[in-house]
Length: 71
Image 1 (cartoon, rainbow, N blue to C red):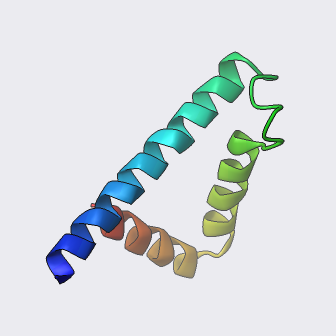
Image 2 (cartoon, rainbow, N blue to C red; image 1 turned 60 degrees about the horizontal axis):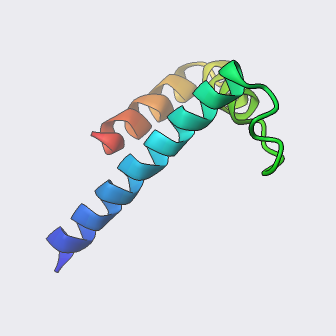
């Protein structure tokens, strides 16, 4: 039961990562392409990276935990 739930969660995360990547590429190539959802995908991603890096060692540890969980 837990293995199937784990598989579904990993699949959902993979789909979300593909959508985030697609959103970043679309926003870079076509700045007005995401106007219909009113989202700044690249800006939000940059803010997230800045939050991790601004937290010093704790931010690095948190980023490593997130990366490890995505594997």
